[in-house]
Length: 208
Ligand SMILES: [Zn+2]
Ligand SMILES: [Zn+2]
Image (cartoon, rainbow, N blue to C red; front, top):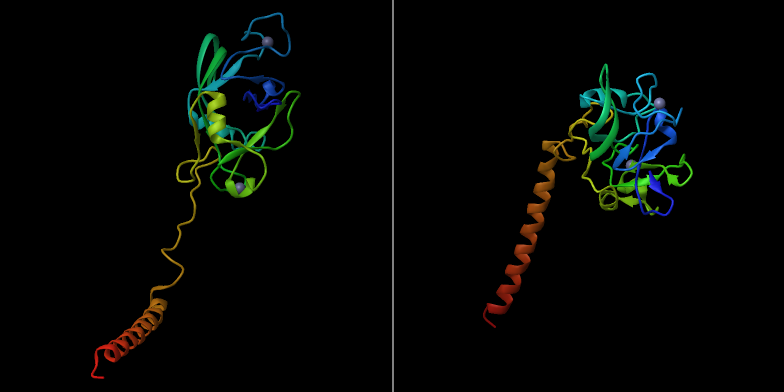
């Protein structure tokens, strides 16, 4: 998320935390009751993390979460264990990993995709081609505002979405046999030029 004045970036929860935007270092707040401290054992509040990045990637297969970014976090303060990880009080984001553009190309910036909340625009990874001439937040700006390393899915490694790989690209556009006539034509052209140069040389150096 980018603040309305463009001076700060934040992150927005994927489930209960959808109404909250938090910074790189943040304390969990309960949206159901401000009277208890997070995480309460009888409430479902607090930050959630997975111990295993594969679990986060599995979650990102759900269309509700597929445009999410992957955050590497340091959890601290009070915590409660759940089946796949921790529910905890304080979070420090260590790195941000962006998925690919919707078109499949490697992300080059973040674009405003609408669906923001008061004071915050919602951004999404976008490639250079899809960004076109629109005003976007560059990865350099994102890194500076977030204060943590930002990496992008290059397509060779596993995506945030799924372990897909691009189709192999042929060496060049032409099958091997198609190259022979092309080479023959080039040799003929070179030969013709050489003959012309020899004729000129003879005219210059020959008996007058
Ligand atoms: Zn709560
Ligand atoms: Zn694109």
